[in-house]
Image (cartoon, rainbow, N blue to C red; front, side, top):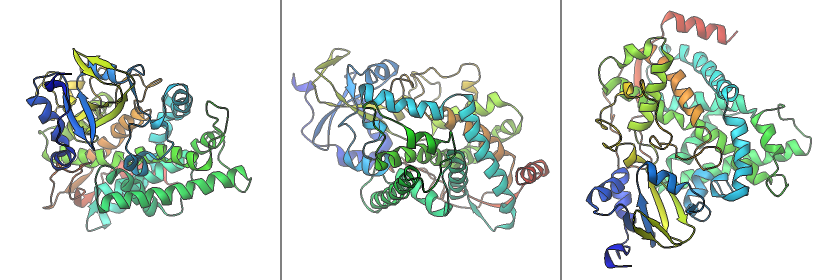
Length: 426
């Protein structure tokens, strides 16, 4: 390997933490090569970009996920033993469980129905409050809704919502946020692990056909039931990503407040196609995951560039979602870009790319889109004022979020929404 193809001697881990989402796109713009070479946590890393790179990355002959995810990420975001760490038949068997629960019109509609009901129950109380922190309130709404749908008993929605948020908020950073995430995961795994044991011991029941029931009864490729810890991990991998939609609902409020004129009016209309286009644009425009990682299965070559076996391979999500070669005016928020042409599978990749059935693309992506398609118009139909606050979304914070959580005051619920809420609670 010539000098230009060797990993740099200097480690870029601190630069990544300092620049956040901008680190990899900036490196790519300055690179004369189709790959970006770096050293992260002492490891040789190669970053790829673009739809062809997505297909290369998700080909199991090229890249595996096992051993690629750092321990701190497993101890906070995904959990040890999670489906994200598996490859081959073990991954396909476990992934099939998630696909059976989270894909298809009935499954998507079930989650959206429960979350929408909770929203309609909660919102009538907002006009009586001095202010509402949208991020926090929506995290509780999503927690209650997804737990209802999944068949999970919920005694303390505030604590569970905080723990779900903490696991996402602390996975990519050292310091207090990271340790809060670890403690939140430990509490949550203990809670659900005990529940799994109680169901198997006949001390309590899981609603037939619920996500809880399916996970408790699931058998892996080796024919064995999931141990209680792994079952708890996978239940969290249903609940936690659903609660994480609160990031995008806060971003929706940010877009309605700071984005181009006419968004609120368009979203208030009964136009399902525009609501979905708005959801796609939220996921493209705003920051969530900066990149994904895998490991080279063998000695590889990408567009003439050698990638030695064992190399850490990064797929640049944020950079691709803002690539001017793929998106006209990529830093303009424009839902209409998705009205005439739905996004191609490997173009828009905020939740990963590739084939959802056999690969590592998020199986809950349809639920995310449908939830945003339901909650975005509900948010747009509310009247409220936005007081002075810190609405910055710092790109050097991983994961980023609206600093203030998006505070609203003087909420006024239109009469039709009040009536719908009343029907949902009786």
